[in-house]
Length: 126
Image (cartoon, rainbow, N blue to C red; front, side, top):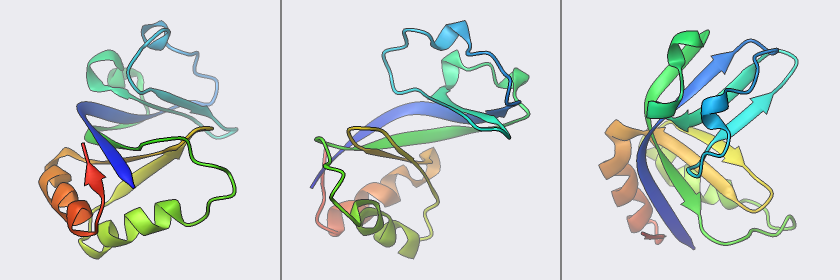
């Protein structure tokens, strides 16, 4: 399985559930995730375009790992197979799934260890 690393510095932020979609994120070509629930609005975006000062809580300094290709809904255990070796090295993750594939965010400080761990586990990383 091929994995693609995006070393952009991302922030994960929590906003009130009625927070309007920021205009700075509209049309953004880099990875961005906005999720609304009755309890919150969670936004993951490049740090330089998210206004963390407006957030109730914010965690900067994450990088992104993308599982390359389109994953069929019938596939099972994909995230588990990738995250198990990371958990064994105590690397914390934040996972996001889209219609096509899965994304895993990890702290920038874990980039070298995560890359080494996944390469050792047999993943091709670009």
